[in-house]
Structures are given as structure tokens and as C-alpha cells.
Length: 312
Image (cartoon, rainbow, N blue to C red; front, top):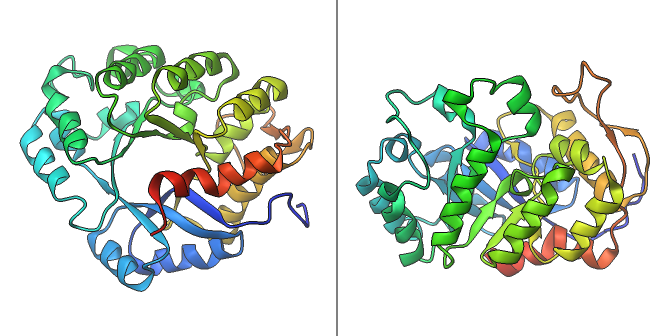
């Protein structure tokens, strides 16, 4: 581990998950050691949310999960009502998750369901009407489609997943979309498509969750990855996708260290400090650092998130 990182300022982790207050407090103690002073907390427990808001009023920007079951069945009225009261309840943005495996958890999904269906237009219009940003997860790593989503009749191809989201983006230029996981496109061959999105849609931002996905893919071509980070440095938020109810110090530290190696150093072939399940049988994942300039690191770790979401 590097004893002294290039960037020494505060960190805004723009993608974390929080549950009950006891696990959240454990998370905060560990994160404090890595310089995190503000974080976007995706809420998984109403009681945990209320306790965190009361005890840590300057720590969190909260994201509220919209009902996946209702959205998946085009039951839009309760979702619209939920959006209408989101800010009053103390949340700053909404969250919805459509990683392809959502179909494993929801029964009786209408045949041919699409997130760009006209039936869901009222939901996205409600976000616009209430000036409510949304974190929208669509698609997963290329490796998942090779290993887990071979049933394309059920999960679709990655291109189909991305195309549906692109159609939504085209229709709603006034909604701020935070698209996690580098827009689900950190793979080097997908960066040109992601660049096209950023050029066409000024209302979208992307985050760097998750650490293993970023390290695995962006390390494959340092020049192309670094050039991308430099060009779009105003549109990228640091995020980890860490969950408060998982693991301890080792779980948290490995993810933070991996990204700091990736963004701040020029290491070559540095082993990922935790196991990457996608590559454990094919030699593992190694980090090649992008050695980003300090001006870009300041935006990545802090300035961009503060500009978009403000201080809690």
C-alpha cells in the first residue's frame, strides 16, 4: 500500500448502500480512515435512514429506492406518488436497479418488458417535474453476460440493455441521470460509445463503482482510459458501491486502495487487493495506474459531486 497518496483532500463517495444504523456506523468508522467525509447513501432501511439522518446530518446525500416490482409491472401511479414526496422525506435523489438479473427476483414480468416502454414515460416525467435526479443501473460487466446471462431470451444482450437506456436518455434531457459503473461501459472497446453518450447528453454523469470492474477493464489500455478520464473529468464521480451490511475493514479497504492505485499511481501489474470472481480462474485481475493529474483527482473525488449534489 502507498504510504502517501497523491490526493490528500476530502472524498465524496457517490455510491454506497446503507441499512440499519449499527452497520452504517461501522461503515463510517472505516471510511473515515480513508478520507471519506461525505457520501451518497442508497437507502435499504427506513429506520436506518431516519437514524442516519438524525445522527449524521452533514454526512449523507440520501437516495430513495423506487419500487422495482411496481415499475416491472408498469404500475406507475404509486411510483409517481413516491417521487412526489421524495424530497419532503429528506432524500435528494431516487434510485432504480435494472441489472439484468432483476428478472430472477420479480415474478410475472410482462412479456417484452422494456425500460423505454411508453408505459413508463409518466415515471420519468415525474422525475423531471419534481427536479429529482436518479441513479439508474442498467446492464452489467461484459464478463457477466459471458458467465451468467447466456440466456439472452431472458436477460437480453448487453447492447439491448444499453439501447433501452439510451432511448430513455434521448427522451428526457431535463432529468439528471447518474449512471453507475462508468455507464456500465468501462470496457475499453465500449469507451467510444460512452463518450458519445456524454457528448450527446449533458444531463448525465457516471460514477466509478465498482472497484474491481474499473480496475479490471480500465487497466487494459492505460492511454485510452487516461485520455477518457482527462476529457470527461467534469462528468465522473468517485464511487465504490460498498454496502454497510457487508464485511469489515478488509472488505472496505481493498476497494478504496484498488481505486486509489488506479487513479493516482503509475503502478504496473499490481494485483487487485481482493479476489475478482470474474477472473479468479483465468489468472486474476491486475491494476495499471492512470496517474491522473491532481486537478482531475480533485474533481473526481470531491468537486464534481459537491457541484451536483451540494453538501448535506
